[in-house]
Image (tube, rainbow, N blue to C red):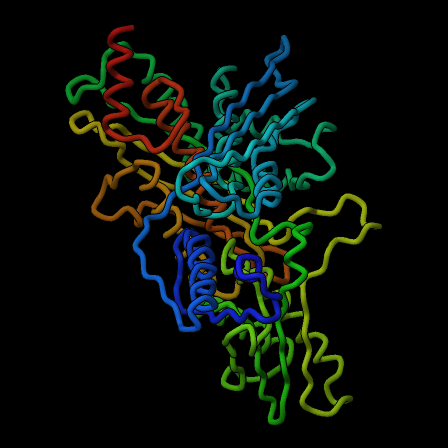
Length: 481
């Protein structure tokens, strides 16, 4: 952006990375805009320029409408998906956003035909930041929530409906993700068993048809929901800007290793060092992570979409493998630079994304009869997220992600500490690289949450979050019906 605004060549623009850690990727747009304004001011005045602002962050507004045609056997045969996204005044990563939204919105159940329309709409409002990705998580939430609605409309247990329909269909476009159906079924069954899903679902189905309103003296309103699916990390393989990003690893005398890159990620450093130690057989104390401006280190690309876990780890591993093959053959220091590869034209049906994660989430909740708050009774999650270097750390991160996601949906703690009611399991993966299932867990939790609230209130839930006021309005409509 700075080069375009100021009319400079990109090689004349140096970016100095500062130590900040955005929670939801929401610090991507304004630094770029303010950086371009500061650069223009500096060129105009010949003096250093600085902008300090406390402008709030805005989430892109996404409205997704799904319509599914069922045959006489109540099986889905065709689906229309209409998606409109308000991106504010500026559009960033437009083509990539469309690809990620399309991947997330695509139904994972067997269906004959699907038509998806995606519109990115600009508006005279502040630019919308990218919260937890470029739309994949929100789009996949609607896909899973729609699964539960279809199961409900056919009066089937949502777990049984998913197990029945999770199979490969001819309608799935070749450019879409290849689904590991058996893995998803296994994750679903493991999660359902720990949550005692089938028994609780049957009990709450019987309870919701009782005529009394929610009352502390008559009955409780409880529900349980389940969802499964996949998640992505980083940009798609076809994202052309990614090929400009790289990492450098140098092996010097006394087995000293230096990794040069522009992404500051202290937590990811532990994973990077584990990979280097394993491939080059060096001690962690001999490894240095070098950060700096793009004049001193390679441009590793933007710090978003959890690229540092799978994608950057992959580049570091490739550098180390190259150094290992040259070691004891070439003089020191050995310096290797590796960047991202674009998919080969000869590759048949390439997987459009790398670093896939898989998961299933179940949630049990009840509506407080006095406050009308949604109280969480338990959350169960099972995930496959690549290679695990430290199991406790991964479980802790996923527990935190689920805890955060349920509060964003409108859930409240039913006990003194909600994390104690969160049961997370991580299954072994054949992948040699780690990945991150944090965003995967958020989307699945939201879909399961909506399904559970729908059962508790005996009404479809089409938007989140659900507040006490939302519950009050639903109950008011039922009273007047």
